[in-house]
Image (cartoon, rainbow, N blue to C red; front, side):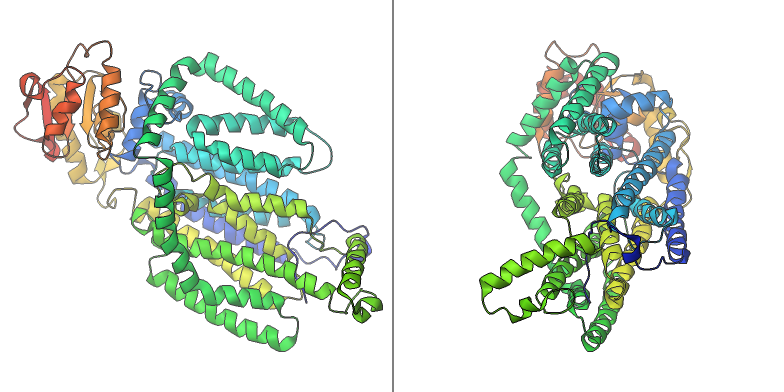
Length: 622
């Protein structure tokens, strides 16, 4: 009893097993749709709840002034900024746009993946419900996008959804014939990804390497799409001569200091090692059972693998619940990534074991191989006969692997991790929101296992279903129970008196603090008034409808970067009105140095507000 993960189409329908009923795909579709509805409704319900002053505030501030303030490390503001303007700067509306893009991108990728998988699964039920069920599972896994990221879309959304869309284009192009439409789409998405995060160039290079059909023509047409996109951005959105140089400058500062490549790699290794150890320790029994179930071909070993698998599933469930694998939200990120990584490991290991099992069967002297293989005494002769028999089997068997398909499946596996590189966060933490790609790998493995390998199919199916349940839990947790750098929404009330947060419901104490801050500074506020928010206080600048001085993100661990941004903004002299200074801490001597780069003196030019609105240190022009 063997298993295979990818296969060539069968030449004759008589070689196919009888079609299975539609009940299985229909049940899978219903289950996946239920999971999707759970997290999607939760996301829609939370669209007008809460507000994070740090990362989310930074995104919204950059979108609010996307065509005025260009000093930033990412060009994501040129993608979402115009959308935010069309929505009338409605924060809840932008969050709903994010929900729509997540659902749409995952649906497109899921359908393309199942269309690609269909000719490699000749025994699959001859109904569109099969493709719909697989695509629904991918969409359900898309809830991981809400597992810990801010509610407002950011550069991670563009990178991860862009990664799925580039995979969609490559899968769609892996078929006979050439169609220039998908290569052009690939070029368009590639420009958006690079503009948002320059390190995605690594992913695009890997993607080009995976191309096996019409590579030169695809690259040529993708270049056409990229050039047209660049021209449209330059002419219709923002001149690239204005947008690109500040991005390059800021990223150069990052690479020289807090984001030095050597430091990042060390940080990645340090943060990844404990997660890998936890995965092997907590889910090793289940993984061993999955491999054993594929390799075992007799009844007794199969039964033993089933008992081992049942024990592994039970222990995996206990560990996932006990260790916070269902929690969701930033506090639980490195906990729920462990069961997600274990699900990927199950797919990869079972797929590899299936290939080994098939190779062992080829030399076992059973089945379709001629008698002379069993009688061969010399290794050279055995190898030659094996090669001859495999060529013969390739014309007849439904489950012979194509190396090209393994390469593409490897690209799907690698995408979440490769696109994660380039930030200060752990790669596996950044890969978690793209969990749908790993679920696609599980689907490929599950549907490729021989029907006779009941234990292996049962274990992989249980892991896949469990992964979708984990996704539903962590998505609703990241949205509602543990929102990004926020408390729960119990007793939320409308944030009155703060026009920038119109329509949002906040915790009563939070709404009161923001209203008091806005009221206290009302005599000094005009739309676009320059405000310096230290540290990581971009959200305060946004809710006051102000503009930042220099970069919108003031990182406390990199004061030199903050000083360089303010100095660049004041290269032609300080603003006509001295900026308001707001701190979430007492004033430090280093703050005077930062503002001195703009020709401002904290002692001479400023006075503090004595009542400390919202518990913040506020300095206004004297």
